[in-house]
Amino acid sequence: MQSTMQDFPLTVGMIFRHGRTVHNASEVVTFEGEKSRRATFAEVGDRAERLAAALRRLKVDVGDRVGTLAWNTQEHLEAYFAIPGIGAVLHTLNLRLFPEQLAYIINHAEDRVIILDDTLVPILAPLAPQLSTVEHYIVIGDGDASALEGGTASVHRYGELLAAEQPGYQWPEIDERAAAAMCYTSGTTGNPKGVVYSHRSTFLHSMGVGEGSAARYTDRDRMLPVVPMFHANAWGAPYAAWMAGADLLLPGRYLQCEPLSVFIETERPTCASAVPTIWTDLLHYTEQHPVDLSSLRMVVCGGSAVPRALIEAYEERFGIRMVQAWGMTETSPLAAVAWPPKDVALGTTEEMDFRSMTGRVMPGVELRIVGDDGAVLPWDGVAVGEIEVRGPWITASYYRDRTPEKFHDGWLRTGDIASVTPGGYLRITDRTKDVIKSGGEWISSVELEGHLMAHPDVAEAAVIAVPDARWDERPLACVVLRPDTEVGAEQLREFLRDRVTKWQLPERWTFIDQVPKTSVGKFDKKVLRARHADGALVVEEIG
Ligand code: ADP
Image (tube, rainbow, N blue to C red; front, top):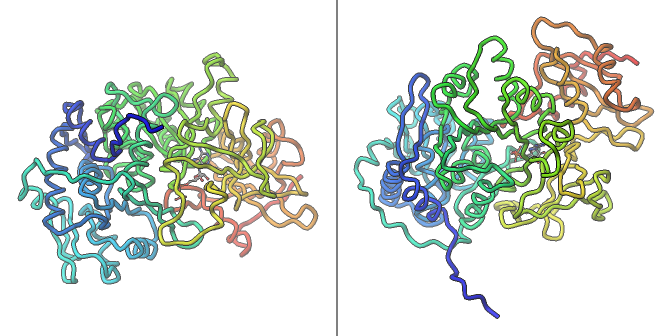
């Protein structure tokens, strides 16, 4: 029997129309270092329509890829609506990729147009001769763009293109299964891989992000996505906040603690999202410089394991609820969020135990863990295996990249190793490529790092596997101390003694100036392993 329901397409256009009409007075604020620019959703809507008309005038067609190389700004948000709205594909370019990777993804996606911030011209211009598919550059701002001139592509000014058009563009009807946007993974191994989101997946993900088991946005919120719009869609915030009518506070390129604090104090966000590094830096910054964070009711933190000590510090020092989330570019990205279960009393250790887990799987995502032999393991909080996920906002393949080994009977293999409790809370212990296998048993590098980073003298710690004649592999703790501290390996090992079982205690230690990071700010353990293999790390052995 067929249903009687309308078969109504779920599109980015539907998200757009809802926000601009129902929440027309909500605002988008873009920080420019000292002052902010503001526009209502209605005004942003008008400008998105002008941009849509301008792109059509440049002959951008259904299915064409339009790249954006931009910080979190109002114009980037306009592009988020205009490009999918005309049936083209928004390709967010990660400006922190290595230049050759940036050129690779633009060519691989065959971008026809690139919209970019004037401040980012120096990143793109040297690559321009290699970008054979690009016909137009559209520069936001009136900074110097002469370095882009002289090639085969024409250079336009964003402001001028919009000024030449009128609002009221007639949006075409779009198939919900058509591509809306694409994003490449950061490619820590090999070339980046492209994930293509559909209108339908974007709509459903946006609904999922806003609802009760995830970010819980309302029209009383002022949302500050510090997570870049070029990295996994700023974790879905632009569309989900727009849908809910939450004001969007966009920090532009001012992500350092000092300007970010000014922006927070003046614009008073109620919620924000950023990776652990940003929250850790801000925490340390506030020790020297008092910052009024009192407007924040919750902050979302994820992208890599969130140390429990960080969650506790925000709770104790500022009364801010830090909510851990998990996901990946391939999962749109949100897939699990660590709200504690209802029967746990607030403020207890037990509550913190749940909050420091990786997350509880969201509705809309199905998740299982699988052992080395491919067998599905129980959700008993003990068994540990690779997370596999499926659902309407999980990718089923990579764009023009055959990688059958990344999928398993219709499930995406995430490369994350975890246990899952009967209630659906996962605890990630490692990436498949980072696991430490000592005498046949796994040692969780993530757990050791979390404990080490709880030590007051430790700024950062990354633990990698190194070869060991007896145990096959053992952990090497790579520690970055905070300025003016001199705690040694012996003391740190003592500190760990109460926290992990004895055989997991690292005997190899090295003190480094900083942990190498990937283009999206995650610990780059591949680089650390290579440095160790080259003998470039000074390793102390104790115990
Ligand atoms: P990349 O482009 O590096 O793949 P992603 O943001 O897609 O960037 O990275 C996804 C990966 O980040 C996940 O597979 C997982 O390993 C890690 N990750 C994300 N959130 C968490 C978290 N809360 N705890 C532990 N690891 C996380």
